[in-house]
Length: 135
Image (cartoon, rainbow, N blue to C red; front, side):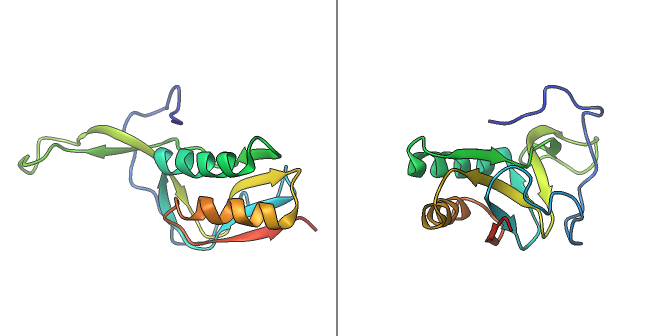
């Protein structure tokens, strides 16, 4: 799974996902892309699961780009722990996906195959998505 090799600070504040993004909104590499229409936290496990679903469907055909990287640490305190005594340990990493963010891109496929691959990937993600095509 995707995890950063090194982060500037071990524990971060919780990220904001409400407002639309201005970054990663256009296709940069592929012909077809999967764009988020809602905002949510996407974990490294969900990204990897979606990538695997697409790769298995494409049977090593085409090229896939993952445009998001989970570099935001999420901390969790143990079960039945009293209030106070500091912040919990880092449990996993997420990427705060804002509406309009391109999550995946593919190239070297026809449109129906790309749409089906994105449909399979969408089932693994917590955000609502739509397929976009390069003009």
